[in-house]
Each structure stands twice: as C-alpha cells, then as structure tokens.
Amino acid sequence: MSSLKLRTLGHASIALYRHGEAPVLLTDPWLIGSVYWRSWWLQHYPDAAELDWLAGAANVYITHEHPDHFHTPSIRRLGKRPLYLFPTLPETGFVAHLRDRGYRTEMMPPLQWRRLDGGISILSLPLWNDDSLLLVDTPDALILNFNDAKPPPPVVRAVRRLADRIKKPRILLASYSPASLVNSFRDASGEMVSMKPPEGYVAFICRLCERLGADIYLPFASQASFERADSVWANRYRTGFADLGRLWRGRTRLLPPYTTLALADLTHQATPPDAYRPAAAARRNARTEERLAEEGAAALGAIDAVRLQHKLNLWRWLMWPLFPRGFAFEAGGTALVYDPRRGRVRIEPAGDYGDFVVSVPALTLREALANDHLSDLGITMFVRIRLLRRIDPRKVYGLFVLFQFDDYGHMRRPAALLRWLGCGLRRSLPGRLRAP
Image 1 (cartoon, rainbow, N blue to C red):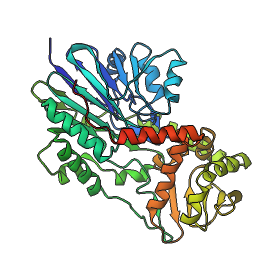
Image 2: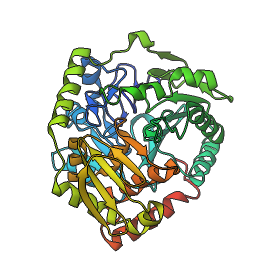
Image 3: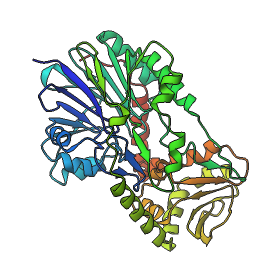
C-alpha cells in the first residue's frame, strides 16, 4: 500500500489520499466560483480533471457553515457520491440543507474518533463559536486542522497533551490573514483605524505552533483575493506568504500554500505562484460588475428597517450604554438609524448619525437581513465603518459577534440560549482527549 499524501487546495480544503486513488478525506470544499456577494475569489482553482478526482472522495468533512467552507456550488460539483460529515453544533441547518437535497450526511459525535480506510481516524472537536477543529490521525503523522477557528487556551492545551501521547509528527493547518472588519474602520477624517497589522497575525500563528509543538505549518484558509471594485482595496492589507516568511519565528517548518506533502518522509512539492490558476479575468469581471449593477438598482425599505430593529433590540440593554448616541446602517442614499434608548430604527437620508455609520450596499444588506445572517457582513471586505467620535473599534467589532449569536438561533428561545451556553462551556473545557 502506497503512503498517504496531504494536499492543500482552494481555500480551506485538504485532500488526504494515496497515489493513483481518490481521496479518503476532503475538507471544506470551496473549489469553484466566488463567495460573499462576488467579493472573494480563489487565488488558485483546481482544473476540471482535479475536480473530477475530488468528486470521488469517500468522505467530506465541513467544519462550519460560512460559505468559504460550506460552499454549495462546490458541493453540487462534487455530487452525491461522498459521505458529508459535520460537527455536532447547536445549529444544524446546513446539514438539513444537504440532506433534503438527497446528499448522504452524518453528524459526528464530538470527541469520538471515527475510523476511515487505511488506518486513518478523524476526531471532530466542536467549539463554542459554531465552528470546529478536525484532528486526523494517520499511520505516519497527526494532522491538526484548525481552519479559521480560534479555540480557547484549554482546547489548545488538550490538543497538545493528546499530540504528546500520540508521538507522531504534527502538521498544523490554520488561517493567517484577516477575514473580518479589522481594516474596515475609518475615523472622521477618513484615515484608516486598523485593529491588527500583519505582524499580529504571524505572531499568533507562531505562538500557536509553539503551543501545539507543531513540526510543520501549512498556510491555510487564507487563499482568497478580493475582486469587487469596492473590496479590491483590502488586498493591500492581506497577510501573505511573504509576510509569513519575513516574520516567521520558532522551530516549526514553514511550507508554502498549495503544497502536496508525503506523510511518510515529510517531503513536499508546492505549486509556484506563477503557475496559479486564478479565475479568468473576463468572467470574474463580468460577474462582479453584474453584482454591482444589481446593488446599484436596490434600495432600502420599511421591511428592512423592521428586520434590523428586531435584530438590534435583542441587545438593546447592551447597545444603550455602549453607543448612547445610536448608530446607522447606510446604503446608497438611505440610512437606517438606530436609537437604542427607544429601541427604534427610522429611515433617514444618508449622513452622519450617532457614534458610527456602517456603509454597505443596499442589496447585500437586504439579503443579509432577509436571510437572518447579518454577521456575514463583517467578512465581505466591502463594508466600511465610519467612526464619528473617538470610540474603541473593538466595541463595534463586537456588535457583529453579537449578531452571530442570533444568526445561529441561540437567542430565539430561552432553551436555545441555555443549550448553547452549556455546550459552549463544555466545549471550551474539553478535559483529556482520548487517543485513537
């Protein structure tokens, strides 16, 4: 039997396979197209033959529901042959979405090893924030797939203790570039207010490698470029592989993106950047321009104000002391202005209102409100936030974190909130993890 190989693809996909065979395991398939309202595109796309090969995967594990990990067009391309595996999270709508369409799905019991073919075992480790880690034990190495989750210190320590007992080379995959609002803030003069520079992201990864005792780090879950006319600016603030190489510290071996790693001897081959296959410029530009035209034709209305008011009033008791002057969501020539003291959203002409203004295209805001997933706005790279007085941007950042709690259904009933809090506490303190 030939030795196993690990290959990174797309954005946050790994394929675990033997030479000449279909993958035993594939993760988080975003392999075609774009995400976040045509804003995010892959730096390097698999070709048609590679997509056919990936469609033969026996198992596909999806860490969480964000579309750069749970990408339904890519899943349709892979088809119904694989078994789609999911973590046991409080919100299971994405599992039902596939099951209702005839895909084979299964939720993995948390913290229990599942044996796959060829001496491979996987363990799903759900987290409090509706995300999960995936640990993959192979005959030659232990793979730690942290994707873009940020597990609390007790979870990291539990994984380290488990890895120390397994005593195999450790390969860490984790994101290393911003995928949030950290560079989206502007002060009253229009100057950027950045929450975290590239040095902070590289330092985080280096510390994580050290705490886990990782032998190899593979850049992961950060292979996107931003291609809308209103998001292309964010490419200047990505943490790239050059930043990793320039700032890297520690004993962990840094490998390039898009690498194939032989697990038996840890030799590797990587696709050089000049061989990357980005989306065809004509097609990409046509899709982004089409979306921008749709954005320009949309306008906010009363139903949007009602939906936003409902969302914000879940946290009114917190909004009032944090933002006593209120704030607004601005789209085109219209602003939805929130008064936390009265718990009301009113429609006004675009302008400066309250403590800050969130600028977002009208159609995107309407769709986010209609789909009840407002936290996705914080990932687009085209949302801007104008700070109208000197406030800590982390407070505004936290607002989008609060949105996520309701987006995933945790605020809809007292029982759902208590269940989520209980699961979050248990998953933040996992104790001793069982070896495979």
